[in-house]
Length: 183
Image (cartoon, rainbow, N blue to C red; front, side, top):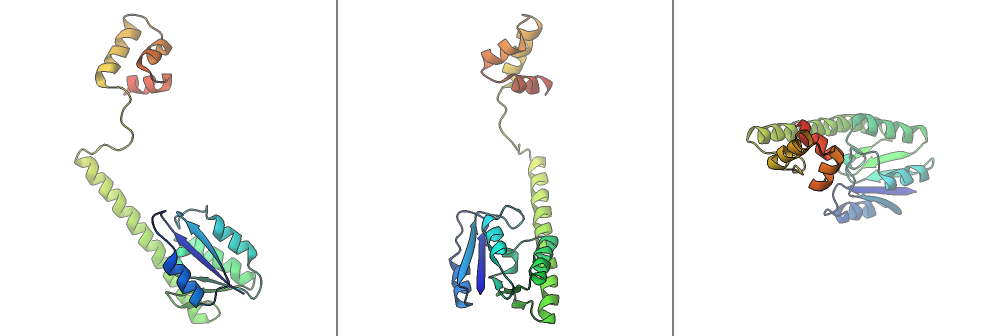
């Protein structure tokens, strides 16, 4: 039996193109993960698909990166499939693990997919560093202004209010108050 697996990374993407290609490839049952990154291990539809595959079945994906972006993850999955007697095909890269060239090509493409992901991560980090140099602040806005922090210090040090009382006055939790006072 031919099984298809499709995945999109964000909720605003759709799987129409992938599902259409899987149907043309003869898949009788398709499994779909939506809003799931290839880098995450939490892909419930893929897990259900892998459990259902039996000797002689074929798993078909539209593109190799739908299966995963880590070489280790993809290779481990494919080794598991091979050990279980399950064939694998990637339509876009025309990889077919029933042939030696297909197996070699699979390892090459998986390596390139991991390289691409690494480059994306590096570019993202470089962009964040450049933004920090330009003064862009990341994370949540501070709950307390500088004036509120000074007022809190005054209440605790001079007026001798307890940190719990001051936190309640400022409508924040005690840990939030402590973080603001430390900063």
